[in-house]
Length: 120
Image (cartoon, rainbow, N blue to C red; front, top):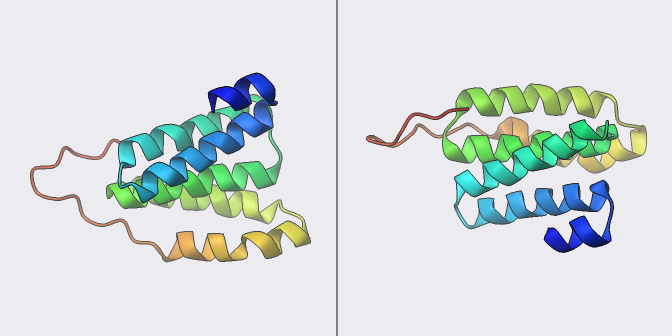
């Protein structure tokens, strides 16, 4: 990410944050996944990013929220991802449909007993 911030534009940095969110999610670290997904969205917002970037930012956050057991966070991310999806052109909708369907099919697991409450 740091290298993209130096060598690329905000777009490459935002996509690096997306990839980091997905990587931390695969590693099971929902705190880091959320942090990077939020950073991705923050960059998109700061640069009035196109709908495709907005969609994938919300997808990353929705996946992280679901994995963390935050039903409310997942639901909000799904609403926002659907809104971004509606603004995509036909070609991008075709590419993103499976991601949206997968996000919609997730149910956030209940937090384990003794776990701190979700902040999402």
